[in-house]
Image (cartoon, rainbow, N blue to C red; front, side, top):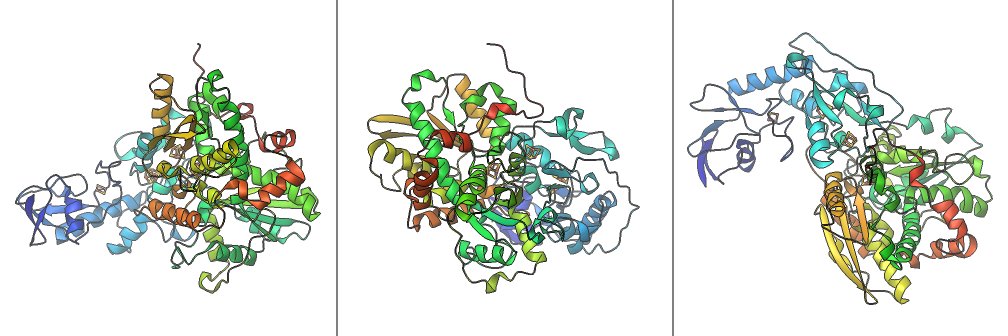
Length: 585
Ligand code: SF4
Ligand code: SF4
Ligand code: SF4
Ligand code: FES
């Protein structure tokens, strides 16, 4: 332990912790801007400076350790003046037009400048902007970049993709796409983790709301039937900024909010999550029956960030991906085929909006070979949870007065197995619940495979079904996916079935979810999804009555000819920019 004083009060803290951590423990927090625990501790912004008695220069609290006898001042006039100067200098290179900024009200720089009392610019503005394409899901406004380097570190250390890098030096230092590339040439997975960790509006997900809500857009077109589907992980985060506790912000209230917004049908993507399990689970069992023919495991394919990663980094393994489409895309195809038929609507008149926790889903809906309904794009528009929240705000929807409403049917019933798709391990657990049934003809306990749950980046398990051992792995975060694949290629590990989610924690931590500056909500969101599963009347995808009816009336059976035509896709039919060359054998 170390004895020190903070603002003249004595404390005893653990040896080895930083000044910032000690100040936090003492309830005398120090502001920070660039710091990201364990990822970005480079002392770039100098907003966290403190005075240490006996030292001439101020020291950064985020990356300097405490020592015995240290006397720290977190709030002296010298400290306040230095912080103000540092932030003022940052502002001089920042496009401070906050009212139109996507992060207005949720920006670390805005918050810190305001709390330091900077109400007038002290330095002349010198802002450089560089052009950026507007038709990809990842948007960058270089005029708002404060060079904190968080995006570089997240992409390098968590996602292992190295899309960003520092360019130029000295006062011209900037952050740009690495290797002098244009973003259109880089193998970005569109996971959006750099967006959710950017402290300002420099990085954002493309905002597509106006494509739906403008005065002449589909929502106002009497000839269009505008329908919406809600992904599992959206329901756990949609009301985070509303003041409603998570448990009170029920899916039924979200349905009511969407009807208020003008959607004619409100569907649950959990339905398609259950459908995905039927198709992907059957594909897995089929493959397991002659597993000696395969060198590598079957990979789940419901995460488009992961699919992009695998295709660009290990293109030779693309055929290991399950051919089952993701829930978003299955939902889209079924809406414009089966639902259109049941409801007697011309498929071309349906405009289908998918609300997702995800930025990569925007790119997935644009894959040219993914549409099988024959009525244009199967998913016309993808909005993130953040766009949903912004639209609710702009329409003044009062969450607290919403009465619960039911989803529309068919495509409105989902099981607990579908709900947990939103969390790392959920797809694998849901698949095993149904695989067990398909092999043995009876259900295992719904919690029989709960050892798969957790937040660790790479988890393994061995499951016995009818004397066959199934070796599974679950990974989240693309850096972990890379480690797993390297181990597979070296023959160090062997699995039958592998689930990968690009975002840490899975979709609950997705790149389209609400941003809470430095608070991570992933664990709470995940727990909420598991509580929905625990309390669900149905917890097995194969027991979903709407899925059973869809097969009876339309698809016939999993992996049928029609199911193959509509619900499966060829992942090799399109390319990701910057794809590595396949090494010769
Ligand atoms: S884009 Fe955002 S995260 Fe990246 S350096 Fe700029 S401000 Fe920081
Ligand atoms: S979206 Fe993901 S892969 Fe693309 S630059 Fe950001 S962190 Fe890297
Ligand atoms: S983990 Fe979920 S949110 Fe993240 S890229 Fe994959 S599908 Fe999207
Ligand atoms: S937060 Fe410490 S230097 Fe930026």
